[in-house]
Length: 286
Image (tube, rainbow, N blue to C red; front, side, top):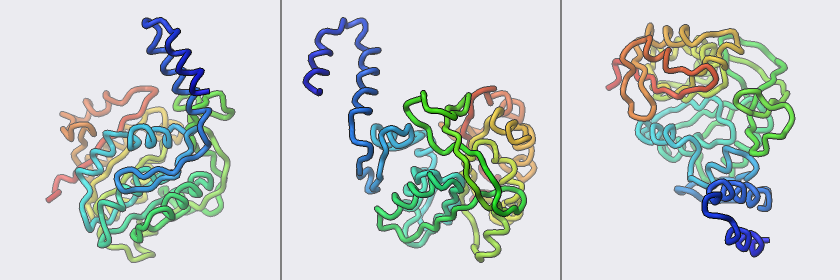
């Protein structure tokens, strides 16, 4: 098959090579084994090459390059970090490597499909500083709730039950909902240095359930904001931004850590059908 693909490349007109190259790349993905084990930057991953997140790690060494850069810049040895929406551990494992043996990473992932992948990736590594929690966070406590969340982004977009905008595969599951404040108090976790938050619209609800921690720890917050994702959960980006500003945070562009000039500039930067990642820095950050 590789021989045929190489011959096919030679027959393609140069004007069409870019398009054909992309098609051939997708064919190669389909032809590969379902999973591969790969070590990147000292971290071992089990990767399903049919999944977009896994393939990005396999091809580029990370998922969300700008978020990864921000993580490496803002995380420090000894930090206690909360990774909310950990999925398969694409950021969890990097956090664990950075904070080292004197730090801790609490990784929350409610969906059974993703949590299984997260456990597998953690087990492949020697990190002893990761605490895994198959729970959902919100602004109130509820037990055994039926949920329909996306946790898989298949490269083959012909899959059924895809979200109409972000193309995540919608899965059914059951989960307990708790607040982060309640969890941290119950488990006697001390100061929180950084929170990563990517939960497809639950960001505001989770922050409301984290207000005590925000007021006492003033953690750095890396979060996704989407107009359409928040609206699907009955919330609005204006309310999320106002919460951060009220708690004395400066919201910055993820790519360069430059603060948005004002509230309107930040809100206007959020597209209708896309999400953005931002960095919320406490004004009293030392």
